Amino acid sequence: MKLYSWNVNGIRAVLNKGALQDFIKKHDPDILCLQETKASRDQFEIDFPQYHEHFFSAVKKGYSGTAIFSKEPALSYVDGFPSDIIEKFEVTGDTYGNPNDEGRVIAAEFKDFWVVTVYTPNSKGDLSRLSLRYDKWDRAFLAYIQQLEKTKPVLFCGDLNVAHQEIDLARPKQNEGQHGYTNEERERFSDFLDAGYTDTFRAFYPDMRDVYSWWTAWGGARANNVGWRIDYWLASKDIVDRVSNPQVHADVMGSDHCPVSIEVDA
Image 1 (spheres, rainbow, N blue to C red):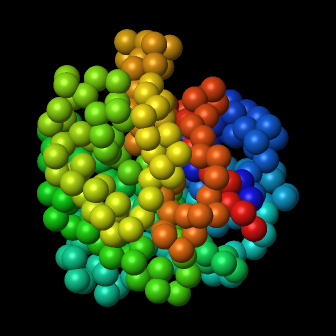
Image 2 (image 1 turned 30 degrees about the vertical axis):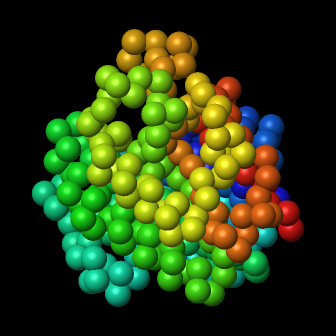
């Protein structure tokens, strides 16, 4: 099975460009997880009859949102954090709004595993949302994954809005302490690894450099490959041995992010 994750930075934009159609035709994913769809389902048309689809859109129009397409129907979907996780970690919002209303997490249950797509809140350039990330969201997300894992192994993916190590961004020294590369965000990513989840790309390619999944739109960053690896597939210990061929598809255009993928033995 081929599993892909892609922050499309607006599904209407990639559809209008033909980028999503071309990508699906070329790569033919069995499961495709999208982030930052920026639209409710009634705002666009798609024609992918080979897929079952599920969208979780933000209450605010044109903002955030996630989706999952799969050739095999999911047994069930869970949108957002369950109430016990929200209450335990007090994920109730900040001055920007309630992240539970932003369509950020979908869990899809399949026969042998869960697939979870996440669009982690951005800490903002002035770090005004860092406390939400560090104190609440990231801890809640890990607890949620662990809760799901009690029933089946978990594969989770998406735009986690953090470069974990120096090797994961082109200019670590210049960006130290900036949003996406603070000690706090990196610590919370380490929490996933400490809890037994594997960053699948780094497991296969521990020393590979210059591999990024996001580039700023300024200064020719993508053309010069001045980027960040902030899009991931992580696997729980009971399924990681079935994961192979992690890839970052920097040649796929249409968004400021590129897709990342893994293969899973059926």
